[in-house]
Image (cartoon, rainbow, N blue to C red):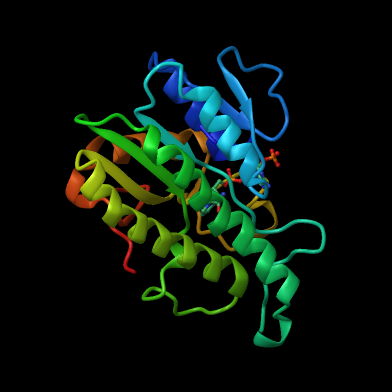
Length: 229
Ligand SMILES: NC(=O)c1ccc[n+]([C@@H]2O[C@H](COP(=O)([O-])OP(=O)(O)OC[C@H]3O[C@@H](n4cnc5c(N)ncnc54)[C@H](OP(=O)(O)O)[C@@H]3O)[C@@H](O)[C@H]2O)c1
């Protein structure tokens, strides 16, 4: 579980551990309360991803990889409200965290998936990364970085089909979830549509359980619906 320190990632890791899976928590900083295996990585440091892959490769077989990292706002980073708010540094930062980092994780971890049996690699994306679904505008760098992630997923899934036909590579939209990432933007969320991280994790795991190899390369929402490209 990449991003086990985050809201959705923490809930996914806890639910998978409750199911009895051996879950390795991959984070930037140590997780003091995690009882299982841990490893460090930073999305902006490919060598740390290669080192994490080398470290985990000799443990239990890796049948699921979930990347629950992401960035929407931070110090000096805020979603754009207008075209004039575009800023090259912010655009590149969101690309680095939301698209490049998860794709490099896939580069280093897809080769570790077993051959000849079902496995799943899922990266948390977002519905706003859908080009076809974009009617509101705004949030340029977040939208564009998630659209880029979705394209990388589709592209890598095509090769994966040839090398590991039983493996599934998808993007996931977790719904709007009550985490640090969504905190400043929760006022406009309709009543009953703000999930707890645990509720979202429960739904996402149900989606992952139901995926078939034909679904590889696509992006699915928390309710199992396929998100348009
Ligand atoms: N929450 C929502 O409503 C919502 C909606 C749609 C999509 N999503 C997507 O769902 C995913 C999870 O979001 P969340 O709400 O759980 O966010 P969150 O609580 O803010 O967690 C973000 C995670 O990303 C990690 N991260 C950020 N930069 C990193 C880096 N350079 N290296 C390694 N890890 C890094 C954070 O690690 P640290 O703890 O070290 O900072 C944290 O574990 C994201 O991809 C987000 O875009 C969320």
